[in-house]
View 1: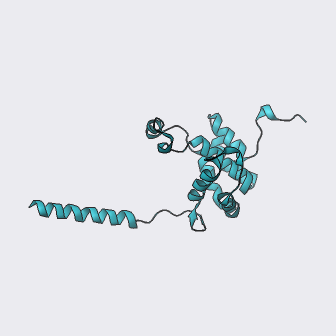
View 2: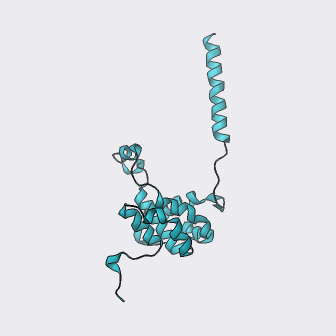
View 3: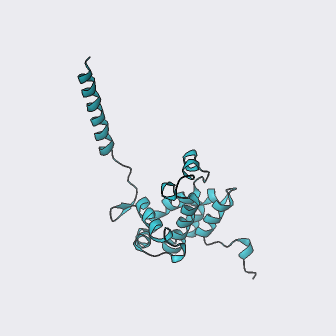
Length: 161
């Protein structure tokens, strides 16, 4: 087989792989205004927390979460319940400049809790059942984020009756 033929086969194979990659259907979750919950969450992170964390729950993305209501809760609960142990890639990228680093799982969990608490306000029974893994976790940060989503106060902040 000649070199020209080998290059032709390799180029055809690369073109087929590229076409398959571009045309492969992406998993679609719940969408609002043609954006997935994940895209709205990313936008929310950029709108509020990228510039100043005390701005509160404002902006187009917060309004989108209010409109999506409980349809967004499974995604947001997943942000709270997921394992926070950094992967090897996250450990490696933490040594790079900020723009190359992955989003903090802790910050994402607290952002999700804020959205659940301020924008969506699902039924408490439904939410506590979904957050059970985080509430039973040995990770204090995970329990705190779950408690924030449920609007629980830490014992030290409880007001005596």
